[in-house]
Length: 231
Image (tube, rainbow, N blue to C red):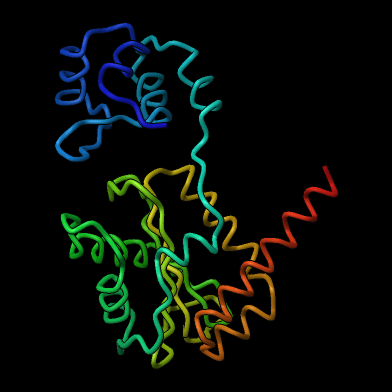
């Protein structure tokens, strides 16, 4: 849940000038989008609690009632694109090739994104096994995108990603999200469909984009039907 300065100030019962002072001098997390400052509801609550600042309980209640909704994974992947024959001789080279293909806003610094992804890999490989990796920024909100996207890159040559199973990676799903809740939802959905052996084989075979999307749509439909029956 993204808040304007006026909205955030009302939850803290202070004026905007005080809020700007806290951002500048007391480390209150704020994010610039199109030259305007916004705050994340969860980050605001955590900061206020840690700094002994009174905050209205309605902040969390409103955040829970306004969850970050994300489109189906197949829709996100259609928007983000599926790219075949992506080059790169090592992990760093692959990440640079992948970022070059992401459909990002013109003003987003791609070099910064490469460095963010490299830093995430330095903390621990995003290789999940069976030749698949999911590079993603650990704190997605810093990227300042309006809509989430998922891009799939099928590599020309498998590359060592230091995955736990030791297998080189041939398929990378890159997640870009505007908020932490949306990011976690996408990761969860991706993890669910990647359990399917049929989809993993399609990725290994570097199948056509339509075949991969059809498989994901089928898996999403099956999951929706299952939860409808359970409910």
